[in-house]
Image (cartoon, rainbow over all chains, first blue to last red; front, side, top):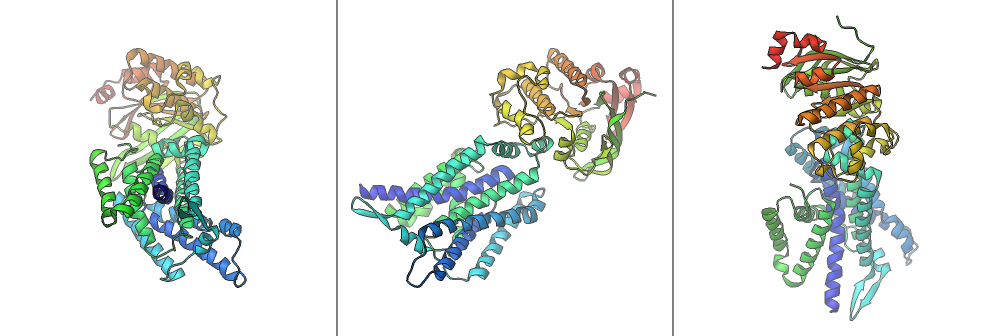
Length: 297
Length: 238
C-alpha cells in the first residue's frame, strides 16, 4: 500500500512540473498560435537561474552553516521571474516580426532560439550541472508507512496545484482573462474593439514563460540543472499537449496527469518502454481525436 | 451636386492591397455627421476592403483616412476604435466561448466606455438582447449574432459605425427590423457607413450612396439618382 502512495505522489510530482511547462506552452499557443520550440529551454533557464541564486546564497553562508530555508524559498522563484523577463524581451524583438509569416518561419525562429538559449546557458554557467539541493535537504523527509518520502516534493505538488487553480481563476474570472480569451478567439475583432493586441501578446508570452521558469525553479532543488534538460522537458510537454489539446489549459492539466501517471507506472513496471508507451498514447489520441482530449478541431 | 453635412470621416484616394493584388484604386468617400451612407457593389468589388482599411485592419499603401479631421491613416485598429470608430464585420466577429455579457463588457473593461447596463441606451436598439446575456456566442443564431455585433460596437460610444453587410442572411422581415435599428442608431447621433450588396436595401436606409466596382468608386449621389442611372445599375447587377 505504501508503495502505491509513493508512486501516486511521484506521478503528481511529475504532473505538477509538466503542467507548469505544458500549460505555458499551451497558453502561448492558445493566444498567439505560435508553437514555441524554445519553451523547454525557458524552463531550463529558470532552473539554472534559481540554482545559481541559491548557490550564491550558500556560498556566502558561514562555513558549516546552511542558509535559512525561508530565505531560500523566497529566492527560489528568481528563475521564474528571470524566465518571464526574458520572455517579455523575446516576444516583441524576435517573435513579433514573424507573426504574419508562414508557420515554418515561426518554427525555425523558435528552434533557433532554443539553440541560442542552450548556448547562453552553457556560456553563463558552463557544462557542469548546477545544484540547489540544500533546499531539498533542509526540508527533510516524511514517513509514509514504512517508506520515507522527501517533504520538498509535497511543496512541488502544491505549487503545481496552486498554479492550476490560479491560472483557471485568472483566465476565467478576471477582466484580463476575458480580454485574453477574446484575443485568442478573434485577434482582428479584439483589435477593432480597442484591445491592444501587441500588449496582450507580450503579456501572454510573459505569463507562459513565467510558468515554464517556475517549473524549472521548483524542480531544481530535487534535480540538478543540466544541459539538455530543456529539450527533454519540451518533448514530454508536447506529449502532454497532444494528449490534452494544444491551446487548452484544462487539456494541459489532464495531459500532465496522464503523462505523470503513465511515466511513473513505466518507471516502476516497464522501464525499458516507458517513453514508447507515452508516444503510443500520444499517437492513439492523434488517431482518435486529433485535436486532443480538450482541444477544438 | 449633393449638399453634405460636415464630414466626420474622410477617405481620400486610398489604395489597398491584399497580398500582391491591388483591391482599392484611389477610393475616396466622405461620411457626414449624423449621416447614413451606403457603399454598394457586387461581391468582391472592394466593399469589405474599404471598411477594413477605414478600421485599420488592412494597411493602405497610399491615400489618407481622416476621422474628425485627424489623420488616422497610420494608426492601428485599436487606437481608431478608442477614438470612436465602431465596427461590426460581415461574419459578426463574435467570440464563441465568451458569453454575450462578456462580449459586451470588453470595451468597458478596457476603460474605453462606461460599463454597459441593462438600462443602457444601446439596449434600446435591440431590447431582446437582454434575454440571452448569459448565452455563449457559439450558441447564438445568425440574427442574434448580428444584433450582438452591432450592439457591442455601440458600447464604444462611437461617432462612426462601420457595418459590413449587416442584412446578409436575414429574412426580409428581419431586414426591416435591422433597417429600423440602423435608423435608431442614426437618431443617437452616430454616423453610419454600411457596406451592402443589395441596392434596394441600401436605398431604404442611405442618405447617400457610393457604388464601387473592381476597387473603384463609380458613382456617388442620392439613392434615387443611382436607381435612375441605368449604366451603374447594370454594372451593380453584373
